[in-house]
Image 1 (tube, rainbow, N blue to C red):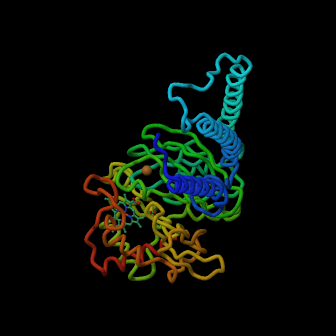
Image 2: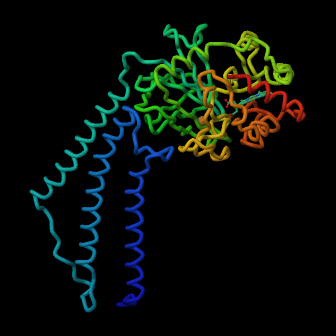
Image 3: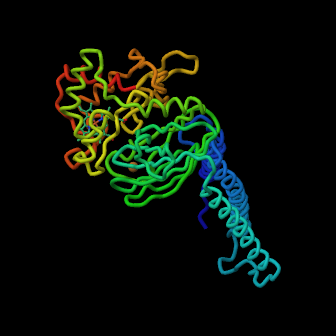
Length: 406
Ligand SMILES: [Cu+2]
């Protein structure tokens, strides 16, 4: 029989070892991904912890089984391979009918799977339990951004006079359970904040319950995980967990409207441009919210992001661009184009002054100039924001006006 040359076999062994080492390193490394935005392995809230508590033992058991089965297969393949001078017609001794072994390898997997099954059912029940003292938020997916409606007066409806509507970023108080109702206004999306919980599909015409809770103050990135068209990959979201008192200040500010005219003359001009060109799609409470109800925008989803408190968000357009510059851990300004760090609205988050020096004007202006050039959209089919052919003067006026929307 032809024998593989020694050097080739050595090379093969080295490649195999390198692959095994890299693969193992990859798996081990993923457990140390704290801080990576979409890692599922560092839970930051109780629901994510429940999933982790199931995931770790199941992975460990699967890992042990994998190693044992692979080792046995490799050992047997080597031990009983055909050697030089073997009679090709001769077979190794065939084993059959070892009763204790057969009973063993039938019962053991059944027990392991039963254990995993019980753990899974307990986990699912836990993830779907309703909580006392929760805040109720409706999460609606649309192409390609998320809308949040808060049932502040707790009357079971999301559009009472004191209820809040916002987009792109969801603000929650730390340590409080948030009961979500996920739904969609166009196609199927999926809501997923990996640090806080697993995924829940957002299906048109359906209301699916889900929940979140953050253990610490901070922001948590999410990503739509159900393919939903052109900009599916650009459909992100952000959860900002703040202290209970900050949350109350945020709610109070979100309940205010923008009926008052801005004092700055450029912003006043911007408000006129906005009414002429943007108000057919976007709502600013106090300006066109009533009219919008009778005359929904020409969009498949029937809704565009509410802009009343745009400047309280750190990011925009499905959270893929920074509306403000991020702040480095040492307090110095970060790189606005670095979307790995979410933009920081600073005092404006709670309705304080907008720090215009930190607003990411370059991207905001580019968005107003030609939104589909920044994010693939299909406005001619009612999906996404069109390019509106604005003049540079109109863009300046609009930005001045938008900057008043804290
Ligand atoms: Cu989506």
